[in-house]
Length: 225
Image 1: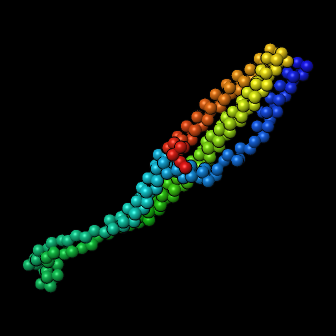
Image 2: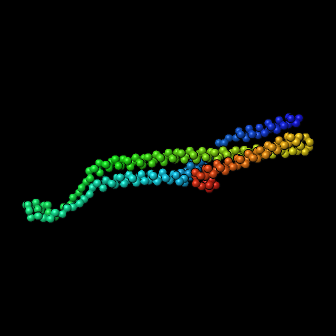
Image 3: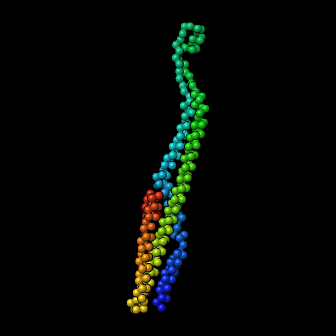
C-alpha cells in the first residue's frame, strides 16, 4: 500500500508538470506592446542617434558640394593707366579699370564626381541606419520574448508549488493519522524544497531578462504603458 502511494505521489507530480507545461506562451505576448518597445528603443538607444547624425552630415555634404559650384567662378579687375604710346583709340579702350570673370575649368570638371561621392556617402549612411534598425528590432524581440518566457516559467513554478503544498497537507494529515510513512512524508517535503529553489532561480532569471530588455530601451518597463 505504501509503495503504491509513493508511486502515486511520483506520477501526481509528473501530471502537475505536464499540465502546466501545456500552457501556451503566445497568450502572454502582446505584439502591440512589442511594437511600442521597438519604437522606444529606436528613439532612445544612443547608438541609433549616431546613425541619424551620420545621415544629417551626409545630407549637409551634398548641399555643400552643390553650392561649391559657385567657387569655380571668380571676379577681378585690372588697372591699366592710360599710355601716351599707341593709338588714341587703343589707349582709351585699354586704359583705366577693367573688370573680368574667371572660371577654374579643372574644378568645374571635378564637381559632378564630388557630388556623386557625397550622394554615395548619404546612401551608405541610410543603409547603415536601416541595417541597424533591423538589428535593433530583432534584438528587442529576442529580449522581449525571453522576458515573457521567464515570467511564464516563474508563473508555472509558482502554480506547481501550490499543488505540492496541497499534496503536503494531505500527506501530513495521513502521516499524523498513521496512514503514511515518514519516508513518503519526507519525499513530499523534498519536492517542496526543490520547487522552492526552482522558484528562486526563476525569479532571478526574470530580473536578468527584464534588466537586459531595459538596457536597450533606456527606461524602465514600469514606465511604459
